[in-house]
Length: 431
Image (cartoon, rainbow, N blue to C red; front, side, top):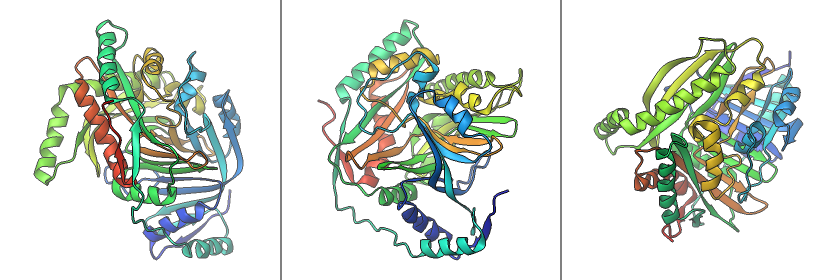
């Protein structure tokens, strides 16, 4: 068993920020932060930081087979991009890709820092742990003055987006599919950004339970995700899809009213239930017969910037199924596709104007004994420092009952917090 050391931290929150600054000196790191979220079904790790790659795989083909071989008997961290769909089904993606993340990147880290309460555990002996603690404690946390004003332009104009929503609804009426998750990109080029400073601001603002910060060479994702994609805990699989969003209230009373309205909204509940059915079907492909259950349906949870409707679906894994196949059988997640999945995956490519890449993919970890926990990469700021390309993306589920203008407003609501963090405004949306 690998050696570890645990020490008490005098200021754990400050140390977390300093550790991120220190991690940025390396070409690769992955931070997973639950932000001590108070409503944690199937509690995830409080705070994990994996730094520097001893071993790594970066795959654009045969990714799941490579993951099976690489993850055997070791703890690894990494991401799976949405466009792995092309490997699972006969699909393709030919849209603009300003970010250029690989389809899959997984690494075995040199350093793993875990914080629970005020206790820091490091995968090193005591002398080296103390040296690392000293080095990290000397780091200076950047303080932003928000001097740079960014302007992001939509990849798909408001006019075209509204028109596309109506076309999607026409296809729904014709019976092609039931629900399609339609997304848009807001981007800027030749943009200077401090990713560490950006993540710290985003994380402080959102305090999301599945936040992550990933660096791979000069590519960064600052993720404030509220959603779990899939977790394996022993023989149990857990998925917690989100469908249904509303704004926060200005007072506690208004907030309660908005929660009640979201919980009772027939359209939002219908969206959620459709995806729950899809998730049940996905889990069944990896599970013992009769074990797929919905533990919680359409429960509204409060977050720092929005309120969300979440369901929890669980199952018992079939002993003959490899844990990587559990991920593959559910990928990409239904909350970011629609139903039926294969048909909407084809149609998404017809309507969207950008390559999703890591957006609506997943970031997480796999342990040496085959357990894992992965989020859904949404509410994220992406940055390619080499290309100076900045991007945020958002979308929503289009159903027969959707109102195009309301779907557009939902997108703006979802990107609002990220724009505030970036000190950004949107260019003209209607052209």
